[in-house]
Amino acid sequence: MASFLLASPATEPLSVADAKAFLRVEHDDDDAIIASLISSARNHVEALTRRGLITQTWRLVLDRWPDDGRIRPKLGPLQSVAAARVYDQTNAASEIDVARFVVDAASGTIAAPGVFLPLSGRALAGIELDVVIGFGAATDVPQVLLQAIRMVVAHWYENRGLVAIGQSVAMLPPSVNAMIGSYRVLSL
Image (cartoon, rainbow, N blue to C red; front, side, top):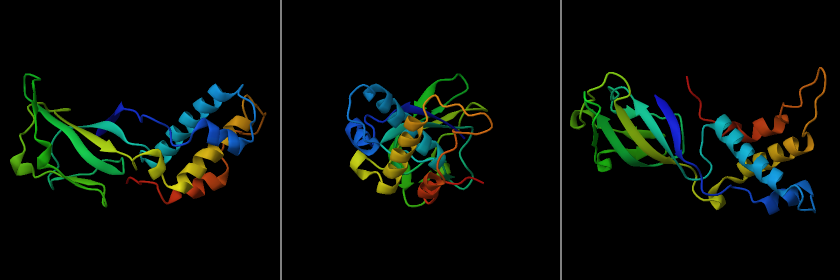
Protein backbone atom coordinates (compact mmCIF):
# COMPACT_ATOMS: atom_id res chain seq x y z
CA MET A 1 0.00 0.00 0.00
CA ALA A 2 1.48 3.28 -1.09
CA SER A 3 0.91 6.48 0.87
CA PHE A 4 1.70 10.12 0.31
CA LEU A 5 1.17 13.36 2.18
CA LEU A 6 -1.78 15.52 1.08
CA ALA A 7 -1.87 18.19 3.78
CA SER A 8 1.11 19.01 5.99
CA PRO A 9 0.68 20.04 9.60
CA ALA A 10 -0.48 23.65 9.99
CA THR A 11 2.03 24.30 12.79
CA GLU A 12 5.14 22.79 14.29
CA PRO A 13 5.08 21.07 17.68
CA LEU A 14 7.89 23.29 18.92
CA SER A 15 8.06 27.08 18.57
CA VAL A 16 11.21 28.91 17.54
CA ALA A 17 11.19 30.69 20.92
CA ASP A 18 11.08 27.36 22.79
CA ALA A 19 13.88 25.95 20.63
CA LYS A 20 16.00 29.07 21.17
CA ALA A 21 15.52 28.77 24.91
CA PHE A 22 16.62 25.12 24.78
CA LEU A 23 19.62 26.05 22.60
CA ARG A 24 20.40 29.10 24.78
CA VAL A 25 20.38 31.33 21.73
CA GLU A 26 19.70 34.95 22.68
CA HIS A 27 19.88 36.61 19.25
CA ASP A 28 17.47 36.57 16.32
CA ASP A 29 20.06 36.03 13.58
CA ASP A 30 19.44 32.27 13.33
CA ASP A 31 15.64 32.25 13.63
CA ALA A 32 15.12 31.06 10.04
CA ILE A 33 17.71 28.31 10.47
CA ILE A 34 16.16 27.19 13.76
CA ALA A 35 12.66 27.15 12.23
CA SER A 36 13.98 25.00 9.39
CA LEU A 37 15.70 22.66 11.85
CA ILE A 38 12.46 22.30 13.83
CA SER A 39 10.55 21.29 10.70
CA SER A 40 13.29 18.89 9.63
CA ALA A 41 13.52 17.38 13.13
CA ARG A 42 9.75 16.85 13.21
CA ASN A 43 9.92 15.14 9.82
CA HIS A 44 12.81 13.00 11.06
CA VAL A 45 10.98 11.90 14.21
CA GLU A 46 7.83 11.22 12.17
CA ALA A 47 9.80 9.11 9.69
CA LEU A 48 11.46 7.09 12.45
CA THR A 49 8.22 6.50 14.36
CA ARG A 50 5.82 6.39 11.39
CA ARG A 51 3.54 8.65 13.38
CA GLY A 52 2.26 12.10 12.55
CA LEU A 53 2.92 14.41 15.46
CA ILE A 54 0.51 17.16 14.41
CA THR A 55 -2.77 16.51 12.54
CA GLN A 56 -2.13 15.91 8.84
CA THR A 57 -3.82 14.18 5.90
CA TRP A 58 -2.37 11.30 3.89
CA ARG A 59 -3.64 9.37 0.87
CA LEU A 60 -3.47 5.59 0.96
CA VAL A 61 -3.52 3.84 -2.42
CA LEU A 62 -4.62 0.20 -2.63
CA ASP A 63 -4.90 -2.22 -5.54
CA ARG A 64 -7.82 -4.08 -3.97
CA TRP A 65 -9.74 -4.35 -0.72
CA PRO A 66 -8.06 -6.63 1.85
CA ASP A 67 -9.63 -10.08 2.18
CA ASP A 68 -10.14 -9.70 5.93
CA GLY A 69 -11.71 -6.24 5.57
CA ARG A 70 -8.96 -4.63 7.66
CA ILE A 71 -6.75 -1.88 6.28
CA ARG A 72 -3.58 -1.46 8.33
CA PRO A 73 -1.77 1.69 7.26
CA LYS A 74 1.80 2.01 8.44
CA LEU A 75 0.95 5.50 9.70
CA GLY A 76 -0.58 6.65 12.93
CA PRO A 77 -2.17 7.58 15.14
CA LEU A 78 -5.31 7.26 13.05
CA GLN A 79 -8.00 9.88 13.59
CA SER A 80 -10.48 9.42 10.74
CA VAL A 81 -11.16 8.58 7.11
CA ALA A 82 -11.75 11.90 5.35
CA ALA A 83 -12.55 10.62 1.84
CA ALA A 84 -12.63 7.39 -0.12
CA ARG A 85 -12.95 6.63 -3.82
CA VAL A 86 -12.72 3.74 -6.21
CA TYR A 87 -11.83 3.94 -9.91
CA ASP A 88 -13.58 2.07 -12.71
CA GLN A 89 -12.09 0.75 -15.99
CA THR A 90 -12.34 4.21 -17.60
CA ASN A 91 -10.44 5.83 -14.68
CA ALA A 92 -13.56 7.60 -13.45
CA ALA A 93 -13.66 7.95 -9.67
CA SER A 94 -16.70 7.10 -7.58
CA GLU A 95 -16.88 8.48 -4.05
CA ILE A 96 -17.55 6.07 -1.21
CA ASP A 97 -19.43 7.14 1.92
CA VAL A 98 -16.81 7.35 4.69
CA ALA A 99 -19.45 6.26 7.21
CA ARG A 100 -18.86 2.72 5.88
CA PHE A 101 -15.43 2.69 7.52
CA VAL A 102 -14.73 2.23 11.22
CA VAL A 103 -11.45 3.55 12.56
CA ASP A 104 -9.99 1.54 15.42
CA ALA A 105 -7.48 4.07 16.73
CA ALA A 106 -6.16 1.70 19.41
CA SER A 107 -5.02 -0.91 16.89
CA GLY A 108 -4.34 1.50 14.02
CA THR A 109 -6.80 -0.31 11.77
CA ILE A 110 -9.55 0.79 9.41
CA ALA A 111 -12.38 -1.72 9.21
CA ALA A 112 -13.85 -1.89 5.72
CA PRO A 113 -16.66 -4.41 5.19
CA GLY A 114 -15.57 -5.65 1.77
CA VAL A 115 -18.91 -7.15 0.77
CA PHE A 116 -20.48 -3.70 0.80
CA LEU A 117 -17.70 -1.82 -1.01
CA PRO A 118 -17.48 -1.40 -4.78
CA LEU A 119 -14.67 -3.23 -6.55
CA SER A 120 -12.01 -1.38 -8.45
CA GLY A 121 -12.07 -1.53 -12.22
CA ARG A 122 -8.30 -1.05 -12.37
CA ALA A 123 -5.76 -3.74 -11.57
CA LEU A 124 -3.41 -1.23 -9.91
CA ALA A 125 -4.07 1.75 -7.66
CA GLY A 126 -7.82 1.53 -8.02
CA ILE A 127 -8.70 2.52 -4.46
CA GLU A 128 -7.80 5.71 -2.59
CA LEU A 129 -8.43 6.53 1.05
CA ASP A 130 -7.65 9.94 2.50
CA VAL A 131 -6.91 9.50 6.20
CA VAL A 132 -6.30 12.02 8.95
CA ILE A 133 -3.51 11.07 11.33
CA GLY A 134 -1.61 12.67 14.18
CA PHE A 135 -1.79 13.23 17.91
CA GLY A 136 -3.71 16.48 17.31
CA ALA A 137 -2.46 19.97 18.12
CA ALA A 138 1.03 20.84 19.34
CA THR A 139 -0.17 20.57 22.95
CA ASP A 140 -1.20 16.94 22.32
CA VAL A 141 2.25 15.72 21.23
CA PRO A 142 3.80 13.47 23.90
CA GLN A 143 6.50 15.29 25.87
CA VAL A 144 9.11 12.62 25.19
CA LEU A 145 8.73 13.17 21.43
CA LEU A 146 9.00 16.95 21.91
CA GLN A 147 12.21 16.37 23.85
CA ALA A 148 13.51 14.18 21.02
CA ILE A 149 12.81 17.03 18.58
CA ARG A 150 14.64 19.49 20.86
CA MET A 151 17.64 17.19 21.02
CA VAL A 152 17.71 16.65 17.24
CA VAL A 153 17.47 20.42 16.68
CA ALA A 154 20.31 20.99 19.16
CA HIS A 155 22.48 18.30 17.58
CA TRP A 156 21.97 19.65 14.08
CA TYR A 157 22.38 23.29 15.19
CA GLU A 158 25.65 22.57 16.99
CA ASN A 159 27.04 20.49 14.12
CA ARG A 160 26.14 22.75 11.18
CA GLY A 161 28.64 22.41 8.39
CA LEU A 162 30.92 20.23 10.47
CA VAL A 163 32.78 17.64 8.42
CA ALA A 164 35.07 15.26 10.21
CA ILE A 165 37.17 12.76 8.31
CA GLY A 166 36.52 9.28 9.58
CA GLN A 167 33.72 10.42 11.89
CA SER A 168 30.00 10.75 11.31
CA VAL A 169 28.36 13.78 12.85
CA ALA A 170 25.12 12.71 11.16
CA MET A 171 24.53 10.10 13.88
CA LEU A 172 22.09 11.30 16.46
CA PRO A 173 22.67 10.94 20.17
CA PRO A 174 21.58 7.44 21.30
CA SER A 175 19.14 9.01 23.76
CA VAL A 176 17.00 10.23 20.85
CA ASN A 177 16.45 6.68 19.63
CA ALA A 178 15.66 5.59 23.16
CA MET A 179 13.07 8.36 23.52
CA ILE A 180 11.20 7.54 20.33
CA GLY A 181 11.56 3.75 20.61
CA SER A 182 8.24 3.13 22.35
CA TYR A 183 6.38 5.21 19.76
CA ARG A 184 7.70 3.37 16.70
CA VAL A 185 5.19 1.65 14.43
CA LEU A 186 6.95 -1.47 13.25
CA SER A 187 6.30 -3.25 9.98
CA LEU A 188 7.07 -6.84 9.20
